[in-house]
Amino acid sequence: MGGRVNSKLRFSTAGESVILRFPARTFEQSEDVETMYPIDLSGKRGVVFGVANEHSIAWPIASILHEAGARLAITYQNDRFRDRVARLTESMPGTLLLECDVSRDESIAAAFDEMARELGGLDFMVHSIAFANRDDLRGEFSKTSRDSFLLSLDISAYSLIPLVRHSADLMPNGGSIVAMTFQASERVFPGYNIMGTAKAALENEVRQLSQEYGGANVRVNAISAGPLETLASRGIHGFPDMRRIHAERAPLRRNITHHEVAKTALFLCSDLASGITGTVIPVDAGYHIMGI
Ligand SMILES: NC(=O)c1ccc[n+]([C@@H]2O[C@H](COP(=O)([O-])OP(=O)(O)OC[C@H]3O[C@@H](n4cnc5c(N)ncnc54)[C@H](O)[C@@H]3O)[C@@H](O)[C@H]2O)c1
Image (cartoon, rainbow, N blue to C red; front, side, top):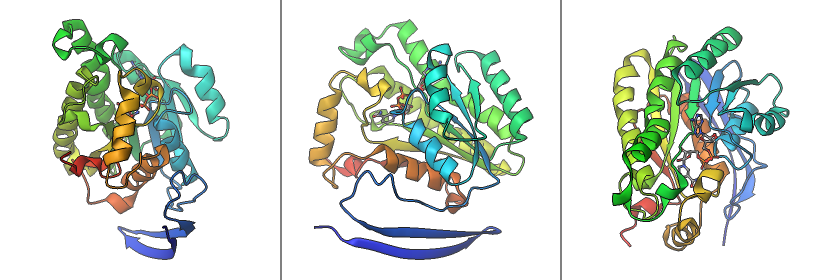
């Protein structure tokens, strides 16, 4: 099984020449972290929200955007995460490290003020943030308390709205927003509970915001990732079963990798995706098409 790919494509997009080179590699290679994708984002500036550690989906996204030449701001939630995220970003010279707790408007405003001062503007923003109490990610959904509902919807869904609003203010020439979602927005994944409700809200926001900001050439999309082991997913009851069943039933018959999500984020942040907005792109080895 497997084959080799070795191709070189040149696209001329809106005022920009983009060369895509796909080095030779085998199809069955899944964690292709060595592969370079020379989509040229040099001169572009962006912010990535949601790096907690090296397992965070936001981390390979930030890495691939940095490798593509973009200057980045990376935010961390609070003091608890600062040292770890600072260590990770040591390998990214020129990266602006900022604290931002999205549950506080003043924290959001301060982070964007700093980005305006230090970066002068933005071309893309990645929202890779979610939170729910661990106890709410198991047991009966009907037992979800009002406080739990408000907390998880606030952090996981509402936060996209002010982050897009502030980002768009720094995008006079347009830009790209990428949010992270999961198929539990539409289907029932027992254990995912309130996060399913939050993802349904988030995806609806993606559509409404893309319509509102489309006139300013700000595109808003989401990636619906298959299950990946991270700090957040560790809290979901039955998560190992979710991964096992995905790998068994997905058309590609495997789980996806963090790097595959990052590649899609790179595409969405680049001019190659200039015609795509308001869309949820599944990066799930095809799992979403299956009936059983
Ligand atoms: N892991 C998966 O299987 C999976 C699948 C699909 C979608 N997602 C989504 O991907 C995104 C990233 O999650 P992850 O799996 O990488 O886990 P993660 O725990 O590494 O990332 C979640 C991030 O949210 C941040 N966060 C939580 N509360 C915050 C607050 N008040 N202010 C600022 N930041 C806050 C955390 O600090 C952390 O960086 C989430 O939206 C998640 O729902 C994950």
